[in-house]
Image 1 (cartoon, helix red, strand yellow):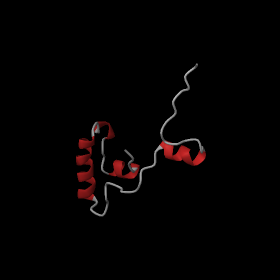
Image 2: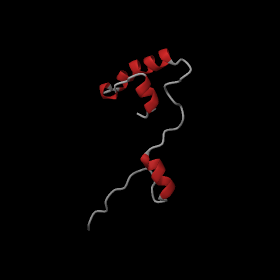
Image 3: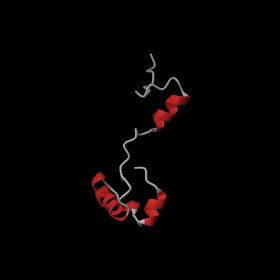
Image 4: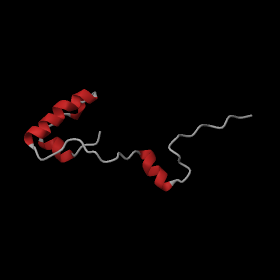
Length: 71
């Protein structure tokens, strides 16, 4: 999960209490109640470490790397 620290601090959200995706319901409800102009879920494409690495290392194919077995 990616979150804005200013929002977490402003609404005193306890990140250690979030153990599952269902725990996010109360977080989103708190933000929406106190700041109705905010949208708690972004619909932009997610960026993973592999996506970043793919821009740097042309050998990354996002399928992973398997070790070559010794013959």
